[in-house]
Amino acid sequence: MNIEFLVEEPSAERALQHILPKILPPSSSYRIHAHQGKMDLLAKLPGKLRAYSVWLPKDWGVCVLVDEDRQNCHELKMRMAAAARQTGIRVLNRIAIEELEAWFFGDWEAVRSAYPKVSANVPSRSGYRDPDAIGGGTWEALERILVRSGHYRTRLPKFEAADRIARHMDPVRNCSKSFQVFRSGLRRFTKD
Image 1: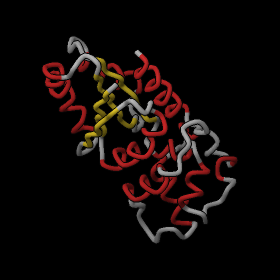
Image 2: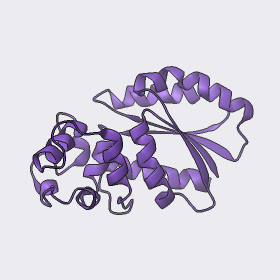
Image 3: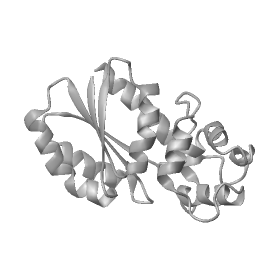
């Protein structure tokens, strides 16, 4: 199966470049298209899906991935589904709860492989046990941890972190529920 991935930013694109070969069957092919943020992607989504419906072969599909960003998940999913309705193409909509960085917290071994000075016991601490429920933003939480451990002086470069962490991720051990839903959805999507 061939899949067109629509993501909200280059860091998500970079992470998927490392993750997808570990999830998709070897016979699958894909392209990833990054946008200038979530609002840009959502604004363009209906038009992009209509355009795909004109030329996309029947054995191809589209996967849309956005961050929840503390929005109402149900409303966000409904908006994405509305854009796909009546296009006649296969669309898999997925939401990273709360942000893509929750997926990194879901595979702390990958974070430690990329950033060896971080503590191994972060996932056992209160507030970090459920990657999809980390309060105050998962990106900000990851930034605080990496700055405190001495890997960065100030700001976390999202693209660099996505590249370094995702290359070590193991889709099987990732305990982020939204990552598990993404992974299982993709596996079903490629079997249909």
